[in-house]
Image 1 (cartoon, rainbow, N blue to C red):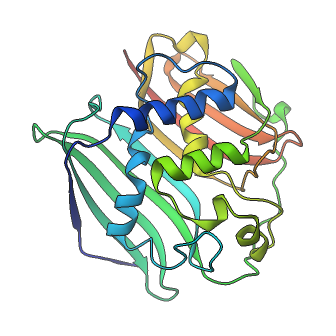
Image 2 (cartoon, rainbow, N blue to C red):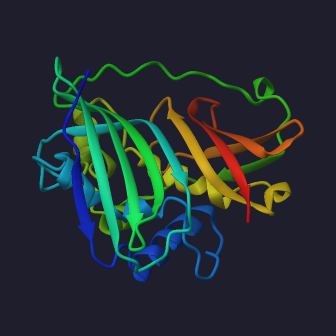
Length: 271
């Protein structure tokens, strides 16, 4: 593993209100409920994806979703919100890219966001696998039945993320990864349908916190993606609160067939 040099992007105006509202509406619609008025989703910095991807060198090739190009598969995500993100505030993004030289595959992106007062408001780390060729070797689905999860405090069943959701996500974030919105790109890898972006799944976590967590907000999220969730595929999000620790929560996302999609560990902070 070698680490590329750091890069910095100044973002005047940061994240605009219309985009924030669009992201909140997308997540709420996926859940079949109205978005909270004025909500700023925990994952709102994903709205900067297009600009940050270009800066990090992730946006090369495949400008049209129908064209072959590098395909990024989300493997892990860490987000720590140190301070409330102010909509419309100038931001500075600092990035460092880790590259696996043997395969020329991006393996890690470390980033932080600093607001116009010079305070770091958020930091995080994204892990991805970068694929160039068809015939990717995907692991067999892992069955993780409800009975293995222990005491579940809250459960939500969702009808699936639709094509319209994926188109809206791409427009809001500038994410041109073809695997998310193009059936041909997915088929090139032997996948049955477009793959739901990991950040949509991460964003849903905040909207399905158990009622016992109403006094808390997410301060830190660590999420591990095990298998892709496909467009229109029904799924469940089950929450487990740690015994004696209402500020620690695990969310497990599975398909209707109990195949594990991802596991998110959340550290909560008082509102």
